[in-house]
Image (cartoon, rainbow, N blue to C red; front, side, top):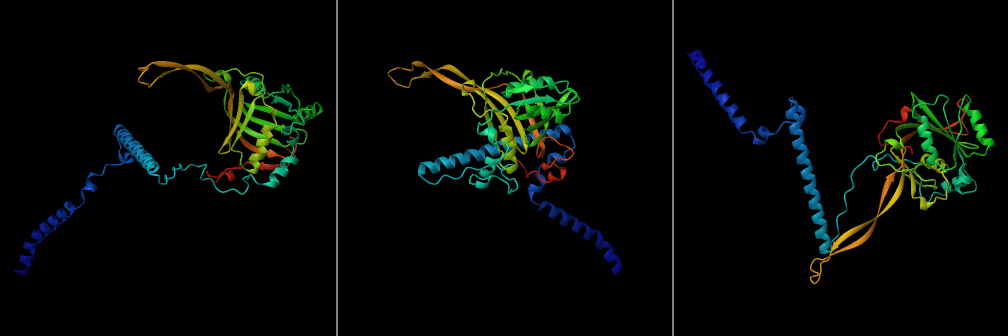
Length: 355
C-alpha cells in the first residue's frame, strides 16, 4: 500500500516542480527578455545592417547630446565666474605613443652642437647654394619621366642627367666633380616609380625611401601650375634624433631664402613614420560681402564691403615616403655602414615611431 501511495504522489510532485520552475522564470527581470540581439548575432544580412545602422544613429545622437551638455556646462561656469572644465582630448595613436629617449628637446645643447658640425650645415647656413642632380634607374619608363619633370619644377636648381648604362658610383663621382650638393635617384618597377634615393654630397649620408601613392599634377582636380619662385618649406613632426637628421637632409635640397611673393609652399608632413609630400600655392581673392545694417534709422539698408579671402591650390605632385635605410657616406651596398635600417622586427607595436 505504501508503494502505491508513493507512485500516486510522483506525478503530483512533478507538476509542483514544473509550476515552481515556471514561477522562477516569471520572476526573472524583464530586461533579459527584451534585450535586443547584437548585429553579429543576426544571420539575415538586411536585418543585420538595419540594426547596425540604428545603433550607429543612437550612438551619434548620444555623442551630440553629451557634447551639447558639456558646452552648456562650460558656458554656465563662465557666466558664474567659476573654473571652466578642461576640454577633453581624444585618445589617438599619436598622443599615446611609446616613450622614446631619442625625442629632441628644445634645450638639448648636444643636438645644437651636432647641427653645427653635420654634413648639411654649409647649405643650411647659406654658405653653399643647393644644386641637385636628378637621375633614374637604368630602365626608366611609364610615369617615371613625368614624375621627374614635376620634381624639377618643385626643387629649384635641379638638373636632370640621363643614367644610361653608368653605375651609380660613376654618377656620384660625376656630380662631385661638378659641385652638386645632392643626387636624387628615382627608381621604377613595372613602369611605376616605387623608390627614391637621396645622396648628400660630398660625404653622405644616403637615404633610401619607399615611394607610394603617387598622384601626378594632371590627375589632381583643379590643380594649379607652379611658378619658378623659390618655395617656402614646411617640415612637420620630425621629433626624434633620426627624424631630425632626415628632416635636415630634406631641408638641404631647397634654398634657405624663399621668395614669398611666389606664394609657393612645399610640405613634408611626418605622421606615424610616413612622410606625406604636398605642393601648394596661396591664392588671394577679393570678394564683395553684403552687410545689413542693424540701425533703426537706416531701416535694414545693405552695404557692400570688400574682403580678401585666402585659399590653397594644390600644384602637385602628391606622394608618400617611408624611410627604409640611412647609410653613412655615399651609396655603397657592399662595404657601406648603416646608421639605421628598417626591419620587420621593429614593427612590434602600433604606438612605436622612429621619426
